[in-house]
Length: 574
Image (cartoon, rainbow, N blue to C red; front, side):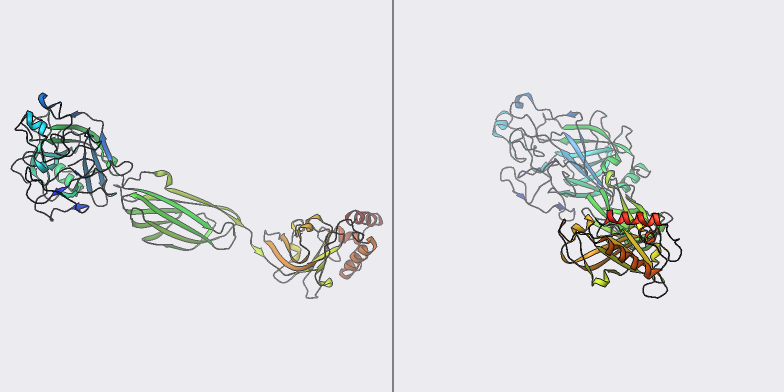
């Protein structure tokens, strides 16, 4: 029967006492498989009532239950024609309406009542001996035979008059197959009757539950076409309707049918279709200005139905050069704000991707937003909170790695943990102006320089720059003894970062040891020697406090300033 379980079929001649057994069938049974389909409840197992996106349940409405004769009421409390609701689900891609009739619990073993089981003895083709002892003429026809029937009727424009009816015609002369027909109002107080058949709209009868049609027992195909044919106007997504259900027995002239009175719903409520979700990944983050940044956009269809018109729009920042855009399916179009993609069909549980390769043109943060939508107005997205995604990528200045020399005259040997000279040389060229290095940003292994020398060391016509560090600086404590790498870091005036490494031999001294102090005279002489090589007129203070030292420009320092420099040396290298 219709219920939250599905139809079974019986193959062979239905006999009242020698019952044909229920045959397990495939998920659905097409009309061409057999000339006529007879329906009964699944007497083997019940199907669960589906919940969540995909099904609209019309429950909680008023029910006119089957009238059971007083002399049988102690035996029959619930019949196989009792109803408690309607389940509807629409597939807008296939234009199929799935229909189910929900039945109450049988009160015996906790399962739902079996369709057409008039005496509720858990079998729709045998009579309870206790019932026959009271009413010998009581008949429980198998498989909704005779005038037994069940169905759902629809008021397609909610004007109070039923328009179509679908289900099992309860006429004793009609074939017991699925019918879709015009509804005939016989009595406004009762359910309508089957009128002129509307052939071609009957769908499938489902014998087993599935994710595609949970808790559904039959389907009506080409529903939008059916609506236009009956109503004379196209169906809209916001159309209001009502639906009612019925179960009509022939078990006894004293037992009436059950009628589930019409319940209102909006067409969009039965068209959940798909939950689209979008995510975006940026790589790398951070990225250098002028470098390559790759966005990967992933669209997932979380179901329960396919979506045949998945669209993505992406707003790209203005400080990007677009190199390429590639989608795993569909087509991509450029827009003034970025791009849009028509991905086409994405099956339930499936995904599609878009790869965007760009080149940042400015330093800072770039924010990129993308949104996924359904291009099919019949497909409602059940969760809009996952339809947008955003990434924020840090764009850093460019980085260069000019070669450096550390204490080249000592073969790269440095002494840390004591006051010692650690000199780092950077050589200028036509493309690298050492005077553009911001001294305040310069570090070696995290230590700040205590002085610098500027001169053309290799006589190539370009200035070279030597930064001088104190080996007693606490930052050098992190360097390991022996051969190790030191990092020179800094920044140019245009924001370009410097990131260079050199291998050195670190001869670490223990703090406070006898050789932990560098002779001040030796240090001073070394600095003077460096200065004199650059410019014989260059004073010691011009080395220690250069700002930006340009040979030949700095004025001679007064004696007081030189003395101050010497005192400063005592403090720095103590």
